[in-house]
Length: 75
Image (cartoon, rainbow, N blue to C red; front, top):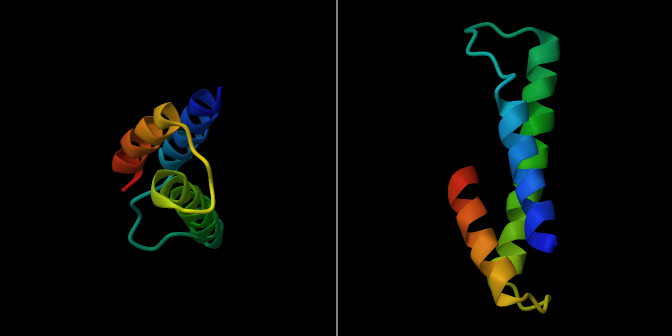
């Protein structure tokens, strides 16, 4: 169940990234969107790294495998 929740969070970040523009001069709203997405992505990566190699959590092997795969997609 945790693996599915992590997959949903990963897909959410990827889906939101599709809304990013490649404009040379982005608007204020676009900049705010980029910053918000960046914060969410970094927060997810931080949590994934904690699950993968952290000492503060007791993570099951299946979750660790899922985390490893997701981290490769996000980085």
